[in-house]
Image (cartoon, rainbow, N blue to C red; front, top):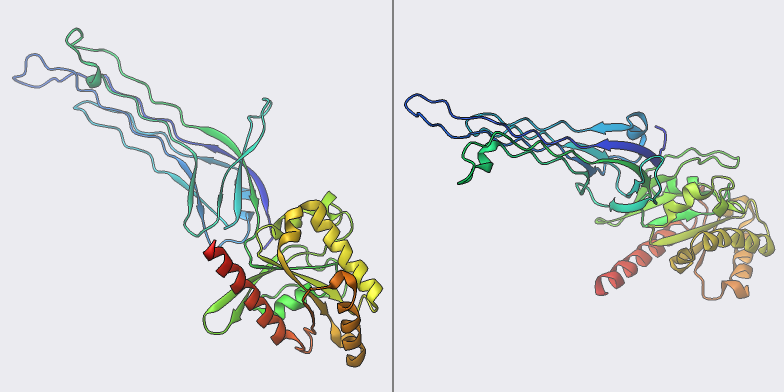
Length: 350
């Protein structure tokens, strides 16, 4: 299934039904009064959060959504039927941006976001039904011969932007081992291969911790220099890091075999995070030296110690892991579980 995280759609709510002009015509009632009923409400268009959806793909193929017009009123004070609302399911993490009418000045603005399963957001209100002539009787006008037309429903253009919801984001340069890592920590099965940009879309996996705790992990496609400007897979996927609670920087020992190369790779990624959003550098994070199985174990441990002693790494948590052999994975899971638990505990206190 293709991963689509941005679409534009056009929305039209239903018009309200027209009020009715009618007069009673009943046997034995010589002077029947006005009895025109009201029009029904036009249908609304509503976005609904759906936890089963992970992409905006369905909306790529259907760009226009219209609700039906409300029914017209009729005699004997009968109100027209209100139209059913149109419900559009969207994945959790969807931002809703309202766009200015085409060809008109104005700026887009965010009208809301869908973060929980079943959450709703009305994006276009249906028009109210017009009032029938029975509403307009008075001491000076006992036989009104007019009724209100129904109001027009709202018409809007939307841009929907999906920002995946995950607690942990795996980030790093291409070939850092992110896809292999998420496949060993969870049941996710992303494409794994020995060439850059194997991952062309974010992948979500759920890591089970004990009997009750689950941690959602996102595998973010590889970042390169100037990713914040759109280079490589660029800002298209940087935004999926925004909602995560903690970042895991993966540095490959297969690609970088000395401290100088490791710190350079780390600085490339952190620079792109900083230029995209300073807030990302304030997230909890840890550094993982991956693919430890690609070099002698003694040398890998020595390199870990050398890297930890660099001034830039003072106070940082740094782990040595091999997804292929399972080395260090237990410690990584424990560290992630503790980090997420502390973040959530702090959040509850505040």
